[in-house]
Length: 221
Image (cartoon, rainbow, N blue to C red; front, side, top):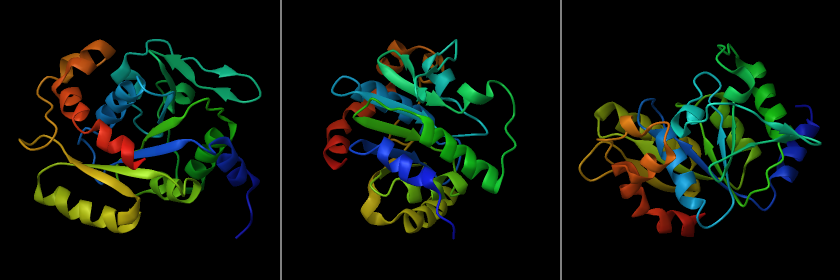
C-alpha cells in the first residue's frame, strides 16, 4: 500500500477538532435532518462546522435553506458561513449535476475536499451517506478519533442493518443510537414544512426531542 501525503494533511487540518459523524445503515431515516438540527443547536455553545459528504444526494443546503451556494478560497477552501454555521457540501462542487463517482474516484474526491478545506471550528458534524460504503470506510480511516451517532427506525429490516453497522464501527466509537419515527424516539410529524427555514427547524418536534439529549451527546464527544 502506497503512502498518500493527503492523509497526513487531513489529520493536521482537523487536529484538536471534535468530530461527530451522523450515520445510518439505511436511507430515509432522518439522518441529514438530525445532522442539521444538531449543528444549529450546538452553535449556541461553540463554533460548529457542518460537512455534507453525500456525493450522490447532498441535502444539507436544502434543509438549511441555502439559496446561493458559495465557498471562499484563501490557501484552501473556506466553507460557507450561513446562520452561524460553517457549511460545506458536495453540492458546493456538483451544484445540481449528478455525481457518478465510484471506488477510487469517490475516495480521491473525499481526500481532495478534506485536504483542501480550512475549518476554523471546534466541532465538526459530518452528515454521511446511508449505508456502509466507501465514505464511511474512509471516515474510519481518516478520523480515528471521530465519534458516531447512529440513526435508525423501528423496523425489523432497520434493526438487522443496525447490528451490522455497530459491528463495523465498533461499540467504543458509538456515543448513541437514535430511533426515529417512534413514540419513544425522535418524532418527525411537522418537519416537512420546516425545511429551508432554520427558525422553524429549531421549533420542530425533532429539535425539541434532540434538545433533551444534547447535553448527553456533548459530554461524550
